[in-house]
Amino acid sequence: MKILVTGTEGYIGARLAPLLIADGHEVVGLDTGYYRDGWLYSPPQRPSVLPRTLVTDLRSVTPSDLEGFEAVVHLAELSNDPLGENRPEITYQINHQGSVRLAQLARQVGVRRFVYASSCSVYGVGVGDWLDETSPTNPRTAYARCKVMVERDLAPMADDRFCVTFLRNATAYGASPRMRFDIVLNDLCGLAWTQRRIAMTSDGSPWRPVVHVEDICRAIRLTLVAPEAAVNGQVLNVGADSENYRVRELAETIASVFPGCEVTTGPSRGDDRSYRVSFAKIGRALPGFSCEWSAAKGARELRAIFERIDMSGETFAFRAFTRLKQLRYLTQTGQLDEDLRWVPL
Ligand SMILES: NC(=O)c1ccc[n+]([C@@H]2O[C@H](COP(=O)([O-])OP(=O)(O)OC[C@H]3O[C@@H](n4cnc5c(N)ncnc54)[C@H](O)[C@@H]3O)[C@@H](O)[C@H]2O)c1
Image (cartoon, rainbow, N blue to C red; front, side, top):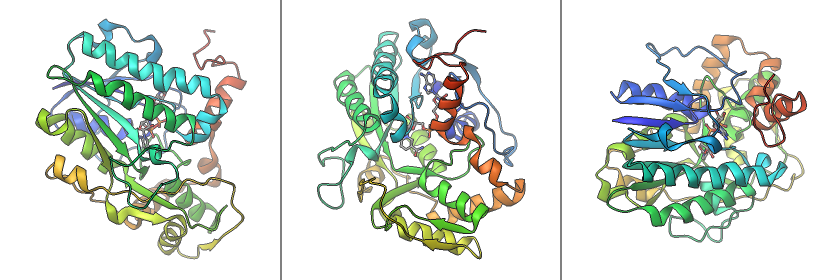
């Protein structure tokens, strides 16, 4: 299949593209390259092939960029909550309008499949335990509201010519060369490694579903080749029931993987998201899908990477591994304008 993957220069995309190429697909990337300053390690897996990539802003995509592709996997958005709250109008411009326009153009030029990276954060503060795809959404942030709006606007486009699937990923973790240390498990592992101490900014009671980046990639790879009838117009939570953890439990699991690490709790910073999610549906829609990773296994993987590169506190704190820091740096130094477009020299 000829596949356009947006966001190939990001955390998930940097893992996904080589896997799709290994599956035998022809992959072209599309990414504006906000986080290109950060590359944590050279992948030990060989061969690791990078796709040809269009260095384009999602908001400037033209129909000709999309012609000839059979599928689009769409990952390129501003990718976390505090980012969305910082300048919500930009989040709406890129994540909502940019994504809807991409899907409209793809449909217009005859792309057959569209896989959208949505998020379990659409559930926000759960209105009940064990939320599933039929539960009401309750988005708390611009980022999560955009995910709900994109799902709402793309759902009616699904028909027998255009197969759309919404993958609501749990919070990702695990190694990627284009690392993110601003997501919970990776952050806690980085703290455990560099400080031997996880000081939580809450009592650690909220529930969080987490999923390894490779398991997200597996869900995308299976969706792309699934019978259309099984996935068209479907919303699928991506993760595993057993991978819902209280944040405190996650911290303790990680501490047990990093010897000498202690865990402390503190007053809440007001992040009241808490949700436990059911992942039963994806196993039915995508036979063969199950998560191969657990939080403990993921923590061991990260420890091995940190050992391999002898990771310093400086590297852990490097701006490009925290999405918000990097965008602030690029705007403060005038490399990006206030709409997050590159400024020519
Ligand atoms: N990582 C997670 O925990 C998680 C969980 C659920 C859903 N998701 C979704 O998966 C997708 C990928 O997440 P990620 O963690 O890899 O994020 P990321 O920030 O690491 O990668 C996003 C990539 O998109 C690119 N991008 C952003 N805006 C762009 C624009 N206007 N034009 C072109 N390229 C642009 C960035 O340069 C970056 O390389 C996102 O849509 C995210 O919301 C991620």
